[in-house]
Image: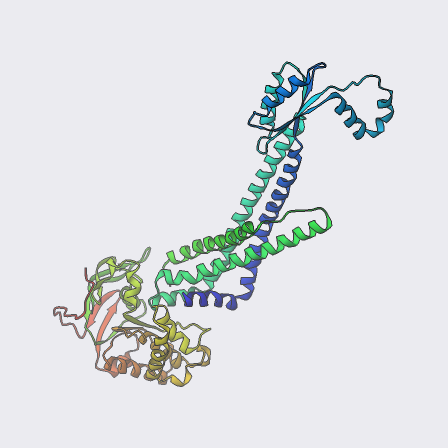
Length: 287
Length: 235
């Protein structure tokens, strides 16, 4: 194993330019994948914050007794999608409107009677805030006889859903494309290394090296390049995150498990690419 | 130790490289393999170190039937052989010492045993003083000596030499040939492919001559039964 590691490290010294080139390409490929990951993480965070605000408002018919509403709330809170259900009386609605819509102070001052209905505000548990669940809960709420109208911003919830789906799809597609590109690039650089050392490989086999022995330094080299590329990609991603976080808005970075995953993913890509290259080369007869 | 029995070898899209070749090289023997370019000398050597396999017939080396070797067994066979080429096949970015050590390292030899063995064979080929030299700092004859040291370091049963003096001047040729004779005198069989007839005439060794793939002359054909000692893995 020592020899294999020495040979793998020697490859960096023998072909420094090619080695730097392969590590750089891996780093940039993984950096781009990582950028999509960062966008996805931050988009998910933003969507979660938006979804927090998803609520269904049941406007009650005028004259609905508070007791009826309270009973209904107890019932609504047993729905497995529902996190909280809060009663908002007519007076509360008016004082909230006065507070929040300061520009209409004059209108509110002229009011003789309160025109605002009482309502029940229903918030859903995380994971049940998609359009599908919101629709289902709204349908059930419509069944209450005292429900005059139900509002839940159906359109923007659906848009939100679609946005998330598209973001996930674009991220996955572009990520996969770049992952494939990295495998090809790493495979090519390793293959260049294998061809560059074709003579050495032929000599190794001639003096009795096993195929495994011949492969090992190349596999290690690929894995090392992948790991270095992965680490560099994490560094680049962190620089991008740092810039955005400082200059634009509060952003989130990968947690340590994801950082480890990126480096491991780079290592696995390097290993996979070199394994494919070396297997192809060793499959052909030596000269 | 090396036995060819009715060997034919055809390369894809080529004519027959070997036609019904049979011979036997005994342990400790020195034999020349002669013939013009393209006569099939290199093919014979490639069949022995299992780089090629016979199209029909049998090649047995040290008891191994080469056609039956698995990919794991081929390296084990090659470790029993020492191989030397006309173009030396040294690694340019390693010193003489490292080139020789390389042949031991690939076999997984323990590091502590490598250096003394390497120095022993370098001394045997007369290059102990140039252990730290790179191939480009050595003459052709010296480079071939390094290649021979590399072939010897695993204590092979037989040394296969493919035109080992083909790239050397007369003086270096004589030196390398003498070295091969010394190695043979110490008990290692040598099969040397060459078309240098002057060299062949210098020594009273067996001559196997190939012509267009056919064996046309064998000065040592005995036809006797094979009596290899240590033939272990015959199928």
